[in-house]
Length: 422
Image 1 (spheres, rainbow, N blue to C red):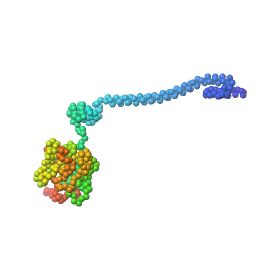
Image 2 (cartoon, rainbow, N blue to C red):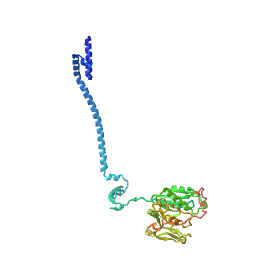
Image 3 (cartoon, rainbow, N blue to C red):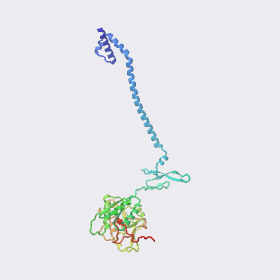
Image 4 (cartoon, one colour):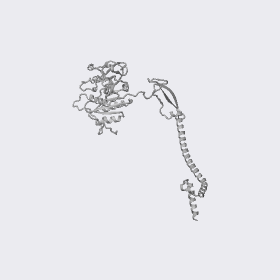
């Protein structure tokens, strides 16, 4: 009995060793019968071993194949979507693109020397019976060369090809009975001018509430400046106010056309259109009222085209001036104030109005700082034959009462009341 147990235990150990594939040196010294039995067991267990290994590898391969198939599906879907989107971007009909754009005329310009622009015009024919609108689109081709000349059909563009120059309008003012009327009239004129435009309104000592409220309601781009010069006896108030505006332009290096527009003048819209064509200094005729307001006076340049040949004035006391121009009769490039090298100015001294000059000579002394002579001037418009600004000198008499902020604090009493008929 003892030998049988020993043999069975040895056979069990041998079979386990063979199944796991581990052989110890002690096993080599087993009896021949034990070795034979272990080999027989290995032969019996071989199909199970093979089946386990093959099935395990098959399951692993199936999982890997499932993962690869999912990635392949994602790649295929991405490729299909990319191809469809690319085809739609290349082969979309022009009709679809036109329907999505609300603008009636469209132009596309290239950056090269020669470019082609496609202009699509739209004409609408209303069908009154059916109440439907049939929209027909027409596609024309035009070409634009480097000089800006067009060939092909005549096309009207709403926007200019070149940006407009900034107009810097300088207006010295103060609170007075006609101040609201003057500023409101000038504001309505400036609102009709195409942008860009900057209105510099200058007051003495402080910003009045009347002017501040009026400027906020105009809708114009403005800057409300204050001349803080404290003088007991100011000879020329407007000279200090204009100098404040000039210092502001010079400090901020504003690039545009500067024009001194008094609030009591009357201007045409053509005047501001002519200003945008000025290169350095432009001048024109101004209509003035005589001191007695009995007749009108024309003062300004006499031109041949743009060239200034001489001056016209009707006042004898002004004939000693170098340039016979009214303060509203000229405009100049603002870069003259802060870029003297560009205009070859002999000195970099600031250009300012002088309060010590006697009345009537403020304009000529200021212009002498801008240009050396008439050859640097540009007459506007061609021939200088049109009056585009009038200076009427209309003011209320001294001591004329007016309410603060141009608003009554108490209602008026009716000095002519209405009576009911019996």
